[in-house]
Image (cartoon, rainbow, N blue to C red; front, side):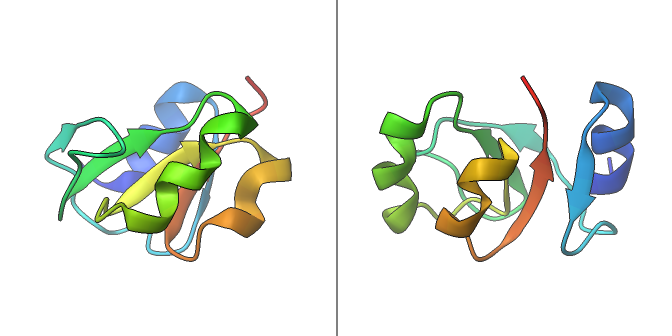
Length: 75
């Protein structure tokens, strides 16, 4: 499924490569290529530095902590 399709389904805003194919969801530590992860609280942002996730679901305020594609959600 495309990242932009997932973003639309969950009411988020897709940032970056919306046409990227996402195959599954994984934890920040375990995520790799074509996998989506999420950070629900700012205190876990430090774990993104070593993540190989294709994209991350996070809040607008936390977007500066991730250089890759993302889905920005309010909650």
